[in-house]
Length: 113
Image (cartoon, rainbow, N blue to C red; front, top):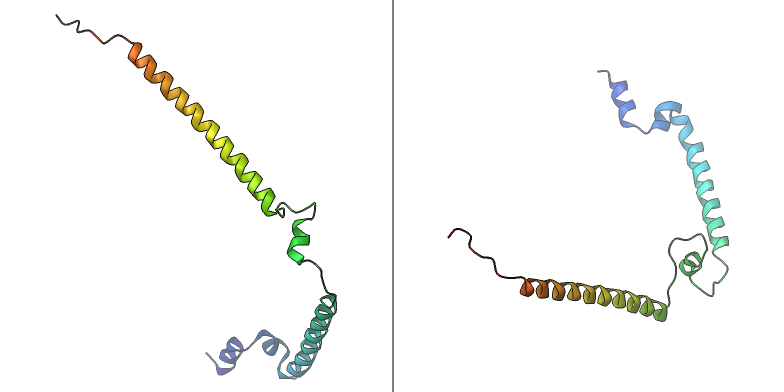
C-alpha cells in the first residue's frame, strides 16, 4: 500500500476530492452559512410569546395530542374509574349467578353400584 492511499483514507472527503486548496474557501463559506442561519434563528425567536410554543402546537387542530387542563384530566379519570367500577359490578354479578347455579345443581351420584 503506498503512502498516498493511506493519507486519502484518513482525511475528510473535501480534502481528498478537492485537495488542500479548497479547505479555506470551504471554511469561509460554511462559517458564513452558519452565521446567517444563527442570525435568522435569533430573528425569528426575538418576538416574546405569551404562551409556550408547546401549548400552541398542542392546541393545533392537526395535532394528535391535546393540551388538557387539570379539571379536564380529572373528568377523564373519573369517567375511566366509573367504567372500571361498572365492569367490576358486572363481573361480581356473573360470579354470584355462577355460584347460585352451582349450589342449585344436585350433587353427582355414583352409578357404579
